[in-house]
Length: 214
Image 1 (tube, rainbow, N blue to C red):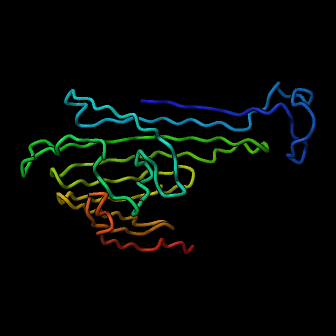
Image 2: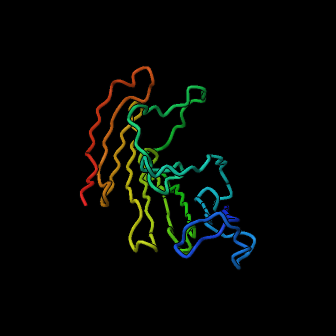
Image 3: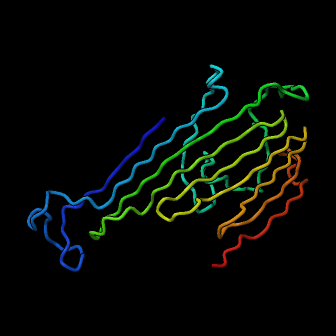
């Protein structure tokens, strides 16, 4: 579990019109600094491998990229990039693992995140963001993986960016399908292509445009 928090303070005060002026906040009857914004983010993740006592290393940096429709931790879904669909690390020379046609244990992982943002730049004392997000993945079979990302916005009283993902390993090929069922970015993406970077141009992809009508 990780917790990050931060805040900004301003030594200058506001006038009766809530406009920042060239006057210290302490001379206007306030404290030494005026809190203008603050935020807190909490993240927690767990998986079936951890419950089995086989904790996997995961040091990926969690950076928000809501403008592209995703984050690296999947909490806002994954940003689709059809320019590069290679699964194999070119520096990884290990042979691919061999699986049976079935498995008795189904691997899964869940990530939870809570975000709260406070704004007071003009004395509004408002919480601009108050959201709880989650993301989960399940390996239904050794070659079928299903994922879901969603959450709830307590400020806007509605669901956050929601995405369903389906991935199929076809040995030398890879199939991906993602679907955003609602919101202004409602859309779907389909891709099938060869994993090898040398033959990455052999592919078929189809996607719908997001519905941005209000």
